[in-house]
Image (cartoon, rainbow, N blue to C red; front, side):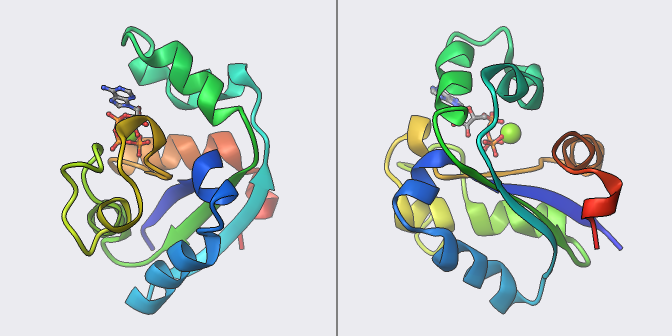
Length: 137
Ligand code: ATP
Ligand code: MG
């Protein structure tokens, strides 16, 4: 069954949005198959966002992701990669639709509270980066 990697970033954890965000995935009917709270190192954050290494905001982004606890999760279900991105909303919360997680709960792109894999290949790579096989149920 299709799986995706979803992470609540340090701002979402600090703002107490864990239960709100998990509830949206659960209510849709997706299944939680792995979850853990971790503080990634800056180097690990760089691996996670390696696609963006040439962007001007890369350094700040890695500092931010490694600034506190991140809730790393794997969710499973038919179409969960694409639909998860729909639940999350557009990258820039000032443009995300109301009803989406970023649209309802965030304002600026540098603090957009949640990450979701953007395709089948990245989902596989990100699940393998963040979780050991024995951590997946
Ligand atoms: P994510 O990968 O975190 O789910 P995304 O896929 O919607 O987000 P990406 O293009 O992969 O968007 O960007 C990754 C992250 O980099 C964004 O979530 C955001 O936190 C940060 N980011 C993107 N664009 C900018 C920008 N112009 N300025 C600052 N930060 C940015
Ligand atoms: Mg992305």
